[in-house]
Length: 505
Ligand code: ADP
Ligand code: MG
Ligand code: ZN
Image (cartoon, rainbow, N blue to C red; front, side, top):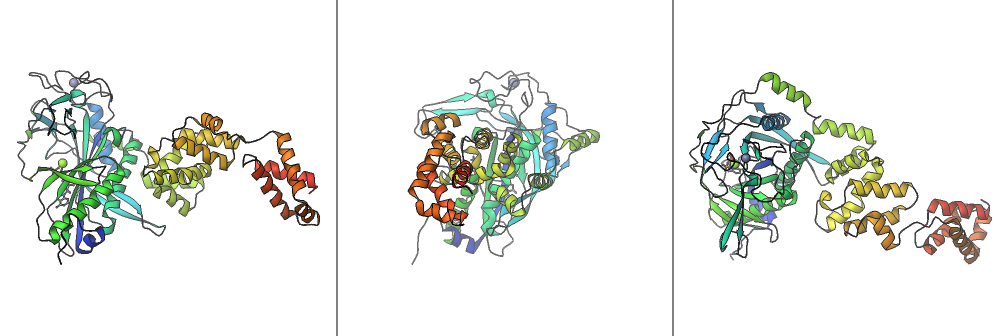
């Protein structure tokens, strides 16, 4: 029996083939001005308002390298344990495309500013433990972003079927760093998770370095995922595809998994993989063919004659090294001590993607365990249910701090706070508005509480008798009855106090 299928189930694919990956990550730097001119870089300005003769490629305009961008590139290189070139040049990568007004992109080719590095990523191993994998970095080089085309009039937003195209050059010339890994080979079942963890780790690192906004949703962090398969035990690399612009951590994992299943289906029926770029479709969870791409694509690279070489003085490189924030593992160990978390708790925090969120929440004055409780409890559950990243829920450290403050002040208990978070996730407004609209305020009115306690005592004479015959633990039933009476909106400690004093215990 032959089964013709577009994809082979992932387990069957991994039973026959080992995936090999290579990740190319583009990072837009957060410099105030562009890579080779003084134009501003702010996101969201009206189209073509942030341009000049240099970034529009007008004849005679001369570029000048942005020193801050070079500094950021060195920072990134050092943080990825790279060697920093003593001397390197920019190169022209020639191709015609309307979003590239110069008809070439100023990039780096065989002389990248940073090369031969490594980093590590940690992923959950499934049994509550974690595993760490080393990723080799091939290079990190400087280049400039292209403009942005919008194809209008078609159904898909792609150029095919469009009636006309619009182009916005505000993005043309924004400094980019492209970070390229060497081929990554990890246990097959871990490949997609390692890729996701790598991109997520890079985001944290770049944030800590303060060199980029690293917003995947705004395109300031973009990932192209190269994937190939080889039969178990084979050492020769298979033909790769390059899936472009995958725009969330989760999509990195999904796109790679999909490519593994698609390529396995082709290879297992004797077919050949076409070396090409592919597009990821977030909605359907598949990739489709882009353009064929050979290793010999001729961009006619040559050294950029209008720019002087970049030769960062060793003293400057060492000065930059001295400003690097502590390495992520060192920082994690320090935070764990400061927060008083056990190894297991810390692992849950990291695996849950909550580390940076808890850091920010604690900075706003919240106790670390309270911050952990909300991020890993209520909010993690909501993220899970809506298949979102914890950081994209629309609830930030500020809201968590606000809710916790109300808990600390006795205006909310944990149960009510959970409902406030539910409202926040559903976009019902600010905590105050949600408390008002849902009627969540804790009853702190002593006379109302006192009456509720009296009612509970009157309704449960058997419990009262037990308590008074020397079984104080039985009073729990009275507290429960009061809480029920108050629909959970009472401070349990206060109720206990009242019950105890009324029964003389
Ligand atoms: P390109 O010009 O195609 O963008 P790059 O050198 O920038 O080439 O990036 C290629 C990426 O693909 C690197 O991360 C590299 O390690 C990876 N790669 C190369 N060959 C393979 C392969 N056979 N399978 C998977 N990844 C590969
Ligand atoms: Mg590339
Ligand atoms: Zn400009």
